[in-house]
Length: 261
Image 1 (cartoon, rainbow, N blue to C red):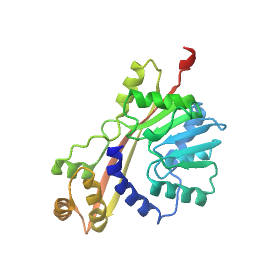
Image 2: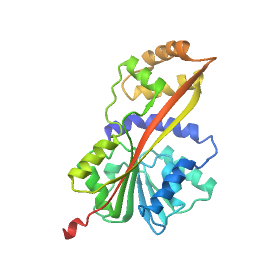
Image 3: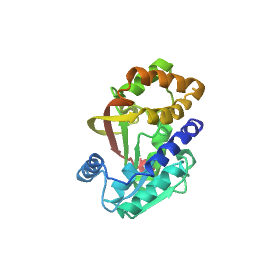
Image 4: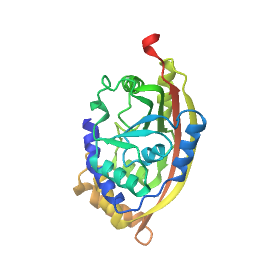
């Protein structure tokens, strides 16, 4: 929770940026949700918990195909964007809960959801948290995580030059799979790769990245001069072109009935 607090200002900044933009459903997310329906990971009658929902990239897509989604996130600015997007898209059945995952009472909510879902949420980081997910689910648990080899070219290089070695971020898919296997589960995996390019103006870089680097203890007095120098060397006509590759995995498994084992 202490680590998550350091991210809050940055996520609030991203939420403010997104609040100015019209909502558009990501076709790749919709494709993944339809895969979940085909594989019986998700059912139209399901009540779903989305842990670390953020601005609702998955919550909104899930809610179009199930009975109800509970979107859990500690950042209320992100949840405000989620609510606005749901209204814009006419999507019903989303309930927002402004809590940290660690604050959610698993005893009173025991087996309340058919599917517990989480995408790239750092809070799901050990065996105990995986067991808490299972305690809330009647049938299935599902994690979307990054796999090795993912990168954003300039962000990776800037962090290398600044000596940033991040900790407390999302767990790689391989570790989730290995731990679940050692827990006696039988996880299934769907993998895919997204490659894309985007550009940021110099003004956007100088607005966004000092907030990001502050999470790792680097103050603006250091990050701003560094970014100005980096942009001078790498920007083209005042624009920084970014190359990104995201190797992703969705890991899902049937929750055992521990009470009857």
